[in-house]
Length: 187
Image 1 (cartoon, rainbow, N blue to C red):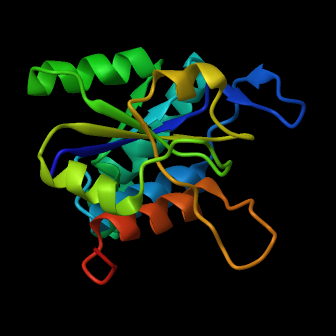
Image 2: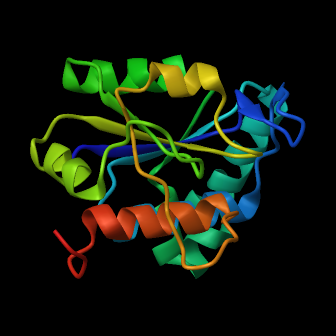
């Protein structure tokens, strides 16, 4: 399977719709890596331009891949082996392109509705074509217009049964991957 994930911490919005760099969180890294391994994702990129945040991620990964955590929780080590850091989305695209010999299709996610979206059934078909796909998830208050405009496709938002629609990114990743890659969902 050629599905990759990128969790972007820049460029994303804050509450005032200003473009910011959001902070990396330990829980997002652990939980998304575990979901990614569960569903056969090839690579999970944590994207931040801030060197101190990249170093924080690398220290966390080192603990779980080589340190005490690797020995006490080998299943966590397996999940965190999927994680790579990157300074930009362009770096992620270049990495995937170098590995596959062509650029990945970019699929963005958003809690907001849009005029033209890719249904989950259509996205599943794209996954089955074995083209490298990069699914982009945003932190803060969502991906910037710049990122949304770069996408080849915008996945339909998750719609619950209540008027409330503000899931954590790790919850959204889990739901979306289950819908797209799970074996018990609708086709």
